[in-house]
Amino acid sequence: MLFHPAAYSSGNDFTEDVLGQPVADSIDEYREDLERKGRDDKHVSETIRLVRKALSKCGCAALADLQRGEDSIETENSIEKYLASRRKSGVSPRTVNADLAAIRSFCRWLKRKKRLTADPTANLQSLDESVDRRRTRRALTDDEALRLFKTTLESDHVFRGLSGRDRAMLYMVAQRSGLRRGELLSLTPRSFKLDREPPTVRVEAGASKHRKEDLLPLPADVAKELSAYLKGKQRSKPIWPGTWWEESAEMFRVDLAAAEIPITDEDGTVLDFHGQRTTFITGLARAGVLPAKAQKLARHSNINLTMQAYTHLQVDELASAVESLPSLRGDKKSVKGEDNDNSRVTDPELDRVIEVWLSITREARDAIAAIIAAPASKQTNE
Image 1 (cartoon, rainbow, N blue to C red):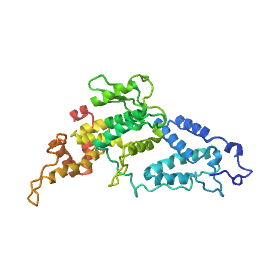
Image 2: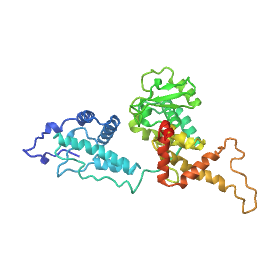
Image 3: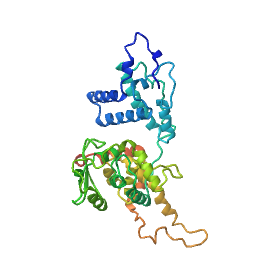
Image 4: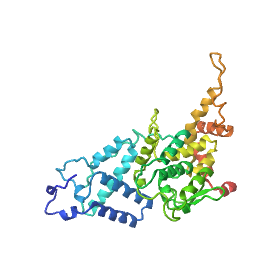
């Protein structure tokens, strides 16, 4: 979007000097303004990240590149084309709308500050999120998780300062703790207590999604790998520093491709960076962990979120039941996994929980979730 002098009149307070100012300077001031207004730290950081990324991709270096007069011509780097390219790449309408909301809020701020005469996002419409919901994430299989770890560990590719080993360890912690991207970004060697029983990782309240400090257990094999990896690293410095988090989706796609793991399967479910949290929760379900414990480990405020992983697993569980039916050909059928020492041992209690959960109403689920979430002392008093 190019600056057109014809868009201005002698009565305007705007000058070409103002429009020549770097966009980056205004973004910094916008951040300060949001912080002064008491906006949530995470909201501010995410908004600024989206604005910087979008305007960088659009090639907007000066405010003039954002100005839009009546005769403006759309360029290859326009906001509209950027959002369209995001949608075409496969991101959800919800994500595209979040991009638009961030850019629009910044442009409206610029207009209020009399740095633009018009809002370049004024005519852009939000997408209908109900038409195409976020693609369903799937969990990595055990084989895929192992292949991804080994391939990335041996990779010579460096992504925004992270070596193959750095990324492999990052993925391992994500898949075995359920930590989110922002939480992983905040970790330092001090966050880990690997010589204790059990080994733990601590997430500070400022980095946690629910703004509370979290102390989570880690598997012994993960603790062993981390102990070797963290040797020599400064105790108070971030383990995975830099700007990788801005392009975590692309980073993950590159490593999936190297491991020959398809991003989208035949059912349309997808793998993405945040999906490693799905891998963690689904892994708990596969291991027979009861939903109430899984909810605490996932740090979900509502057990309905946790139960989604258990519900998705239900088809696999039912498959073993129908396999027990006699063959119509009269052949003796072997039970799947009976000769496999690594087959999952089902927990009858867990199976019953899932069966009942699927049969009750949403109101009943919400009531149960409220009881589980209530403090133990309150439950005792009642």
